[in-house]
Image (cartoon, rainbow, N blue to C red; front, side, top):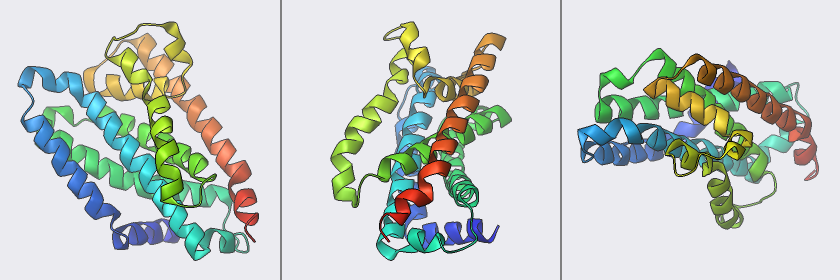
Length: 227
């Protein structure tokens, strides 16, 4: 709990909440100027894009701050476990992205779009992007180095959205690791049948488990290389 609260404090002090508030206002304005008939169709897309930015880029920025300050390397010498570190990052950024997403859903699209299932979808997608961001940023030492490659990373992660908007119905999209979490996010907002729920939940669990395992195995190993 102390680590979680410290992460929240550091995110606030380093301006992540301010940046999230600015992005939220942008999404709200987009929804306000979108025809009512189209709002429900673009909501999953906007939530996905928002979580992609806030989850992946925010955790990348946090991790780089820790590298610059030597915090992560120092944690190798403390009793803090890899699991404790990862859960704290997922939970603290999950709070931020959840508040951000629910704010623009409620204000921009109306209270009927805010439900328990929508919260579940947002939390799962946020955790997916945070864990993915932690993996990606391990191979870069600054945001300048990360920015260009991150465009390609974002595009690859974005591919299942083409299936969501029916630009393509290829079964290959179901092999994409983001397909399950995106389906869960989509049906939590728009609804879905039992088979869709089963696939999205099982796929999301597998993806999160794989991402967590990779991070758990390599987190302090990579940090230790700088010692």
